[in-house]
Length: 116
Length: 113
Image (cartoon, rainbow over all chains, first blue to last red; front, side, top):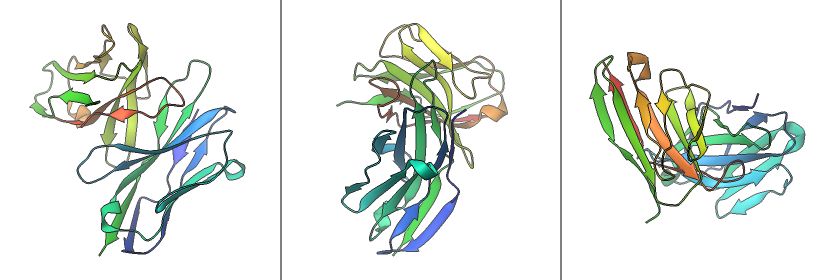
């Protein structure tokens, strides 16, 4: 069964600090997809990034970067020079491919608070 | 505007009174899904549908029903709601399964007393 663990329940930083959100996953599939979603205080869920299991390249998008390592089954998310607007709950999610399993499994989320 | 809509956004009801939360998407997406979000538990999938007339259980289907008679609509039905179904519910849709990101509705906050 697929599983996603976000060990950090809450993180609090001061503006301009860098922060890394951890995500560890479990799956028996060789083909799978990993996602990060953001849920700001307003409550909507916003897609941030997708990674497939064959692409271990790290990705940078502005202040956001993602480090995907199959060897440790991790897909960590780093925010550089954090801002108050980054305050949100961040979810990591896993989707397997193939067979009849089309479920998307979310981690429990990490609440990030960026203080001015 | 491409979107997923849910109604109602807020609902307070009593135990045992049947209710339906509607979900509609205008993106011609094949895949639709329902999640519930509870403190400390994250989002858990209730049901999903890969296409019209094709639905399947997620991780927490007990006490819920769904139907997919049209591609754009995927209502969530609680035949006999109980207090443990008090939660924040999200509907989502995507082009397909696996590789595709899901687009979420704004959420429905349900309270069952």
